[in-house]
Length: 164
Length: 164
Image (cartoon, rainbow over all chains, first blue to last red; front, side):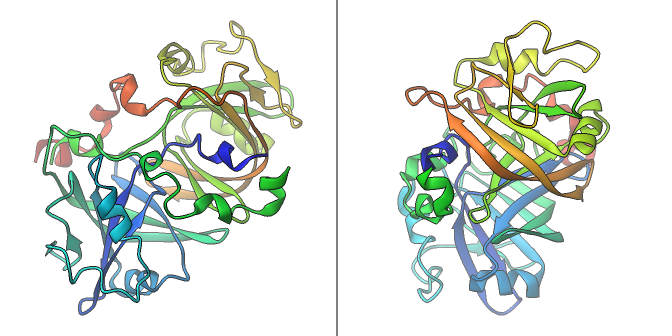
């Protein structure tokens, strides 16, 4: 089975904002989808070893900033390790709970963490959508394929799958 | 908040195949994503009131057939209610566990149900990828936006969100 198999799955590209009320961080994620209509829930698969996960658990809120097509610069910026203060060099505001919002996003969602479930090397975080806004109606959202495996994801699949 | 907000989320279009060993069914789904690298897991959000959910629970396996761009005919066909025998009029084979595979798909994944979690009006089904194949390397996968709200999804959001 080839890594290119997994590339047939369609994902967007989002900047997820988190805060514990004092500290703030934001990171690029692709594994996000709608999971329920009513109540409106988003499911985010997050790496529990990343420092943003601790902020998520502490604050129990997150924002989803939808990146517009063509803004791989933003995807790359927020894909840097947490040792970089990624919010220091970009313009941002905060939602009602203090989680980061990017004015350059196509749209944003403001979510309350409503559940967490283990999922292999990740955790599924369910976000109840409390607010949201579409900032721009003309441009399309970014497709993860645009990033051309920027994060090296294809190297992270188990060798048994990649080699067979 | 407008329904168009949720349209900024990027999803693909898949035909999910299920079987209890005797009966077979397949249905169109958009809420699917990768959730883990190792082990390789897919997360599918499924409506528990649909009859395919009972087959999934009985058989504990499912296939994911990735639809190619342009094949909204297949998306529409498998989006019909379960009262229609959707597999009667198309060509299909079965994976090692008997779950339906579509030769017209771009790729398929064969999954074992490894967990189920409640998610509002849906259930998150985690599938451990046991096998898979990319059948075609030239065409692109279908994006849910191609279907132009074929399933009337925008009418299913809570009125409080749609009206505000």
